[in-house]
Length: 272
Image (cartoon, rainbow, N blue to C red):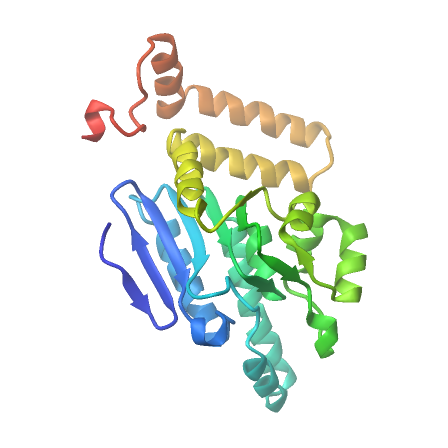
């Protein structure tokens, strides 16, 4: 693994296989995010999204909890600022969520301990969500007189408006099994099997064409945001026409038909 980069409360690394890991490292504050941590995450996501050696992203937290959401002292301090400053500040969190949601490579999040408030936004923006069976979740904002505004588009998209009504209005906690039933989490694991499970899912995405996965992510966003009409149908037809004649599209088809490993998979002669 390349050396870890410390960005204040964020650790960042990229291993030899192109797996980037961002680790929330503010465990004394339960990895709650403030303006500094949000900016650190934004900077790293922008850098990693343009890094040629990155193939997937893993998001996790150090300490007992994934994240307690927004730092309440930071939120309280914003009351001393004017309206425009508050809007600009909130826009940074919204920008972070958008960057994570549209990251060009597969994103995997591992949740342990508590995931409260804004932390659910991070989870819902990731492609694959794994959680410890003992993890707990809560959209706690209304208990504090707040609303989960910037994360709402991603949370509502993930769990649906009906469930969002219940859990955003009651601020009740729910466990990992409930989170899985809601679609917030895909797979549950235990503390003892977490690393093996993460390695399994990382291996699954590394076995696939990087270009095809990036195109698939764009396709999913496109299809989920538009009605099924002539414009969308034309888009999908043009996309597959482009991909199947692309370098990686041809390599994948040829490798399958020739019963060999494609060049992007670990162990191929061209990959060392």
